Image 1 (cartoon, rainbow, N blue to C red):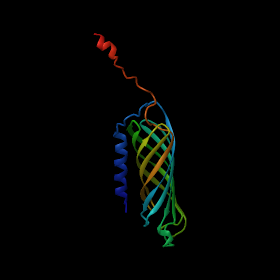
Image 2: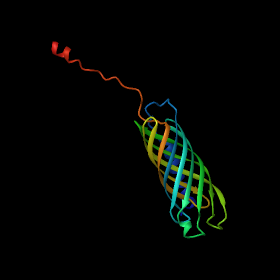
Image 3: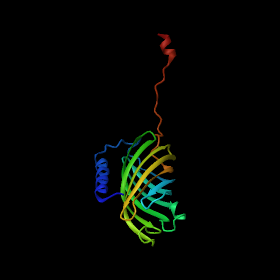
Image 4: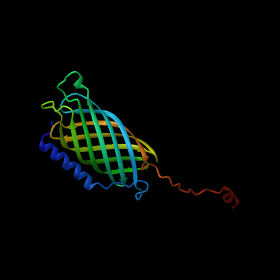
Length: 195
């Protein structure tokens, strides 16, 4: 279980790496990108068991900065066998981070603040909620309009921290590969042979 000291160390490392990171600009650093993403994955709530995760997010990026509104829903698989377990956990958060990448490949590190709701609280089995600190690392491959990626996430909150990963699809104006074509000089063999 994550105690207060470990949480502070984890947050200090994340914030320090974001502050000291020299993020590499995308193909066009002045271009603002926006997209939506949906994903499916798994998670491990500290209340026990495994969970299936649904993820959706809206992202705005202007390299190297990225802001996102993300929603996660964890469907606890243990609750079917144990009526006292946590049924569902829902998270709605705002994250800010930095992106490193080039030519359609990117890695993003982000943290933020979120509201977390529990269908059945681990302590008394009544609905409850908490503020949380969402942490996220994702890697993506993208073209101009569609992309595919994987996101590892965690949420540190006062009730039941959790972590997991999701595979996602991106749709929208992605950082992707540059749309400008570069002119390559042609070799004119007729001039070379005439000499």
